[in-house]
Image 1: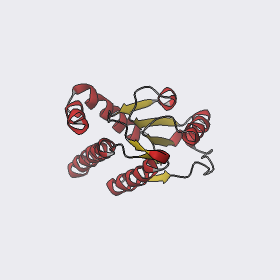
Image 2: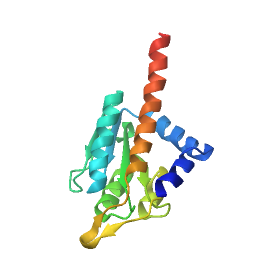
Image 3: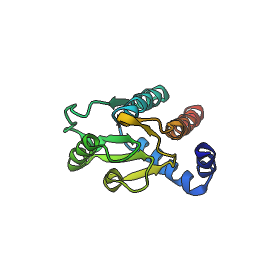
Length: 166
């Protein structure tokens, strides 16, 4: 049911505007860094690889203790993947990156969170949060993958048209 609801949301003009804003931010930056831990870290690695395949330099930080990027941040776009938007180590890293003028895009399940307040652009999906004992998260990642792939394919198709016009 969550997936069906998201499919309807993904077809709305407001969502198209968010995707367009996300695409424009990517095009305006030379380096893309995906940031996430746990399940979100695995999605961050996928996102970095997908964008690299499309032709945009991207990497992933999945270790919250990884030293922060402190040079040339005006050319870096940080794409944060966080289901809850409340992971302490990710919040700490994003605050450091914001202090150094990084642009932050957040892909999250919740429309109101600490990370939402720090992001320049937030794209929410709404899936039922599912967790089992010991904090194992089973919340669907399909909407996040869709967002990453949709933006990636839009970038690819735009670049393809530009290259064909030359």
